[in-house]
Image (tube, rainbow, N blue to C red; front, side, top):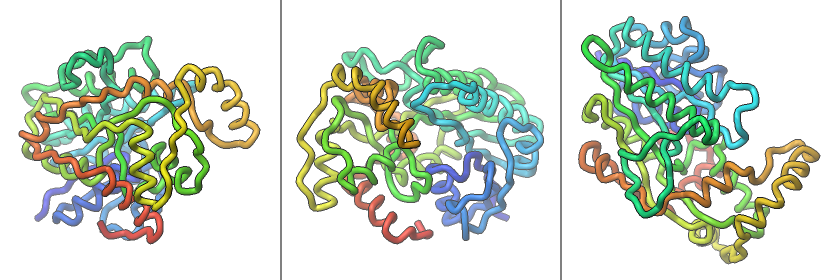
Length: 329
């Protein structure tokens, strides 16, 4: 009988793609999500409605599973006003680890983030040895650092094996919600972004990340961390790739970081008036300003077979999927 794999956060971008790839590879899949979602419709999987903060839900999810891929997290560029970001991103891993040990789960593949560690200085390599973010850093970043450490500090004899993966900015199809980068791509398609913020970031394809996650289920070394990154693009370079895919002229106007920072109160007010998320927050501006231009995924390439397809392919696949909402990967 095929192995039973559990996936938390299964209705998210990475989660639903993992469910698709796992099914295609012949695995049985049990997926935890907080509510029914169109992202999982039609997939031959067992859905468990629940929350990683509820130990009973996690117990139902992990019963009889050999491996769990822990994707569930709250991503935020708006701080943590209710405390739910920190709770979900720390108590969630703690519950998964505790129940996995009780249920005899062999391995946990924990999805962290490059945001868990410091970006500066640029002069030093951005690899798996970077120091963790602290409580003085942004809430999401600190929560991911804490969640990762909870997982790694509880390995050993009689406990599940733990492999930690840190993706950069994931981009590509099956982005149902959509993600922050998915929203930006849709706004660019509509021509609603006339100018670009200063800075840039490392972008990695959703399919490349999913394949490396699957490889980590068997090939990843327990107790190790792997960067799943792609390639750095300035915002101007990123917009030029999008414009090429859309057959349009690229956006050339760049707004300096300091000037955009002064506009944040106005941006927040406009968002409140229009009852929509703000176009930028201080967190998102700082992420672009501090995006490290040389994230090094050599370790994942050597041990997990991690590869990076061109950004143009990822962007084109995103828009093609948006037109068809195809379900097969």
